[in-house]
Image (cartoon, rainbow, N blue to C red; front, side, top):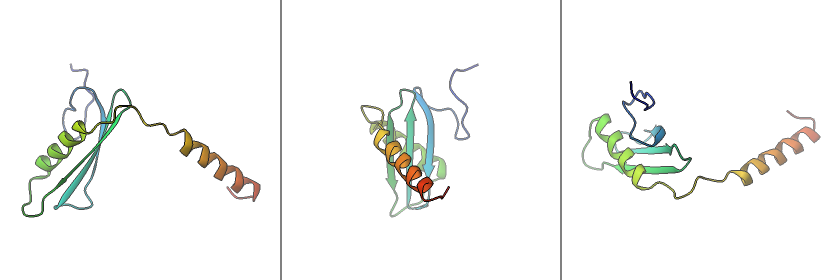
Length: 97
C-alpha cells in the first residue's frame, strides 16, 4: 500500500495534497492548481496554439509547471475571511441571510 492519496488523475507526486485542473480553454490551454501538503499553492498554465496534445499530456505539463511555481509560503486568507464576516454582519443587520 502507498501513502500517496488516490487521485482520478493517477498517483500524485510526492508532497502534493491535491490537484485541480481548469480546462475552459481546452484544447488550446490548461491551467493547474496544485496544493502541497505544507499548504503552499502553485499554478501552472500551458498553451497549445498550434497542436492539440492528449488530455493526459496537457495535464502532466500543467502539473509540472505548477510544481515549479509553488509559493514559498502558504496563503494567508485572514483579510478575505474578515471581509466576508463584515459582509455577513452587514447583511444580517439589513435582515438578509
